[in-house]
Length: 151
Image (cartoon, rainbow, N blue to C red; front, side, top):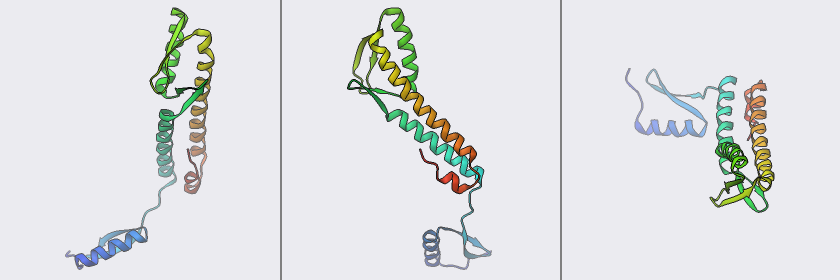
């Protein structure tokens, strides 16, 4: 079927659709504005979970823990490094660890334990927040409840 509208009419209808948060479709050769279909609860939960995963990832990349004026990362890599350097430190007697800014530091095992504890606690807090938000998302019964959840 042939469309019965001019480019100017299409542009005006598209602008109206945008301002009214509707979609513009062609139906039987005519421009029609329709409401944007609402998300289902499952779609809203999936979108929110993706949002929370990304926010968690970005937070873990940027967040640090301060120990005696030194800033240490709490990223997933830091978690892995923390375990490996602690084990190696027990073998070689000292630990070389890097601050978030790349400054290398050498510690005895005794000096490093409070640092490891602080980093571990910060990582555990971030992971707890992540899993608590997952549980909150799963417990939602409406799209509106899902929308209230923030990192």
